[in-house]
Length: 245
Image (cartoon, rainbow, N blue to C red):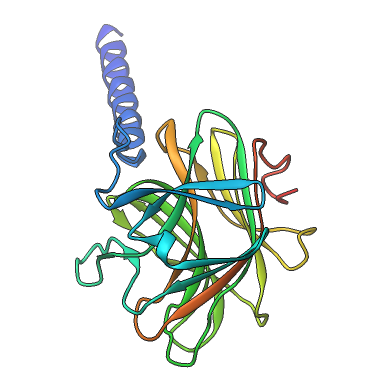
């Protein structure tokens, strides 16, 4: 009997240890300090209710504010952000407009985007970002794929990037949304800003102090000029993470 109890206890410890190890392995290793890229400069760009105070890779020189709530963002060719697991496609030259945010509080970033899609512009896109530093970020994109289709794409990066192609959309313009309640971060798109489709949801592991941002990208050829309108940052999260409302 005593031997059976000892064996049962040992087995329990092994199972518990295995679960704990699995949880540790699954949790991304987030840097405790918000170490910013060296090529960030200060700026002061008002768009909607949001002020962009910093520019990555000269983003403030790539934009033209047409109206209080309309901005043209031009990106020259071969500028992108991606941390390739194989190293071949790694690029960290994308221009991004950034606004600091307290990630210990809820937030929702929304924008109407019209990417500069062109025939030769493979992976041209308009992006929304959550950004801690050059190896910890996520972008939500309306992007042109290898076959010329226009898709919602998400890329999540902790050291290296994943790459997820979502819905194909036969429209020139779409609404994008990123929302967090401090525990969960989710990505959405909408045709009318009323009914939202969730494309990605995961645990918010980002540092307490980070950035939200917008960008236009042109990883291969030509200039991608994207239009951003109805940009807003609310200090609340969506009420239903499945519907995005």
